[in-house]
Amino acid sequence: MAEKYEKVDAVVIGAGLAGIVTALELLNTGKKVALIDRDIPEKLGGLARWSFGGMFFVNSDHQKKRGIRDSVDLALRDWNSFAEFGEGDHWPRKWAEQYVHQCTDEVYRWLLTQGVSFFPVVHWVERGLHQPGNSVPRFHMAWGTGQGLTDTLIARLQNHPKRDNLRLEFGFKVEEIITGSNGAEGVRGVKEANGETFEVYAENVVVAAGGITGNIEMVKKHWYKPWGEPPETILNGSHPVADGALHLEVERLNGNLTHLDKAWHYAAGVHHPNPKFENHGLSLVPVKSGLWLNYQGQRMGPIPLVSAFDTRYLVERICQEPVKYSWQVYNRKIAVKEMAVSGSEFNDGFRDKDYLKVLKTVLFGNKNLVDHLLKNCKDFVVANSIDELADKMNALTGEGHVQKDLLRDSIRHYDEMLGRGKKYHNDEQLRRISQLRQYTGDKLRVSKYAKIEDKSALPLIAVREFILSRKSLGGIQTDLECRVLTRPGSNPKPETIPGLYAVGEAAGFGGGGMHGLRSLEGTFLGGCVFTGRIAAKAISGKKL
Image (tube, rainbow, N blue to C red; front, side):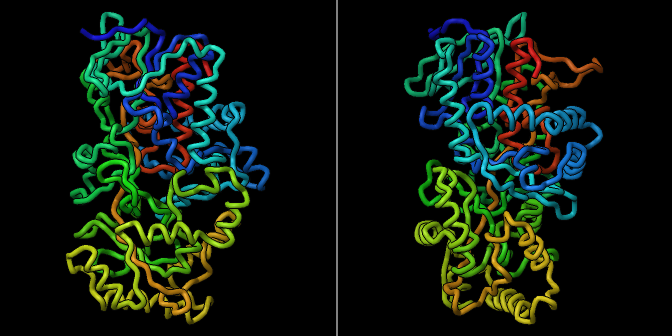
């Protein structure tokens, strides 16, 4: 017989960032809350805890202090450009408008009141390639990375004056949303530690269980069809428990799932040196001064691949190749200056709130990170010559795809152009590097026209990079109060499932896909906070 718990005002499924914010705001209004999570207590905070902590805000105080002139109109224009919304994207479009208009007041300023602070420099990412992207810098780094962000909010939750109103449980796998004549009435599932069943009854149920990108088979099933067949190897940069099971349960209840083929994958995934689960991947922040090559060792084009402009295009271009993984080639000097890993784990200066360590890394590079990855990540190879590098690349894959002449030509043609001098630079990658170096936030982190085959900068480094799953851009469709919408039927007006809400990545960060095709970045953590606050206010009968 299932163990039944005291009825609460709301049960929140998933204790990631969106779930934590929802629970915190519900406590603020005096509600009794059950926050239940499938994972262990040490992973409270979910994927947000592992993140770099960047958030998209518009016309913030941080922007103003740095002379960055931003506006809602400009930001919404940039968002719509990157999103490329379709005619039927009513709710995603509405959510995009709502987020852009309210994110600074309802996320940025609210987080400041909770004790979260931000790094002084606003970063400039997703500037756009074929589609205009961020016209100005908007990527605000939470000081302490995602770990600091989640720790701050967890502390607020654990030390809340009404903490007795919160039941926090781990190892609870929800298998069913209980419904009755009044709609959603609770959840039923199993305790993974001992197999015992449980039931939690509630006036409201909030799905905050993340996306589908922890389930690689589900990612492949919903692969974006214009990209052809999915890559044979996709590394997992999400949580394995973000498996889409709750999406299917909502669909069973006639909830509408949309845009599951839209996802925010990364192009530079490598195997984690110390994996926590099967197929665990790391997302490298691709160096700007290296050459991005296809599986044969040929420079990719016709537009060279350079990060910070359009992440989706990088993935798309690699997936156009017959073999869908890639290489980046550079030397140790470039690696020390430019190499980084996305997330809190390998950014200890930011994570530990150590300005001196951050400054030291910016000025002198990150030798420790380079040495660690060269020694412990199986996707890195080093050599003192191009021929030796090609041999080691082929030995790593066992496929013999890399052709020495293509690799040699790619590197030397690029280096020859650099040798002619800046006024003769006729290469799109060099133009992009020049553009990046004009902004203070990038100048110290991007090499000044560095050659690859530089004897003073050896050894040469080649990195085999896979597509890495990360975030779902689609999900459970919701109205502007996070209420789950039913599948379209004969009734032209949208209907909701009473008492059922979805927030964060489970809802495609709002409306089942507020990003459209692309993200301007920083809109994932921001979307989790935003939807969590909206859902809690809706349940409490209040407005933001």
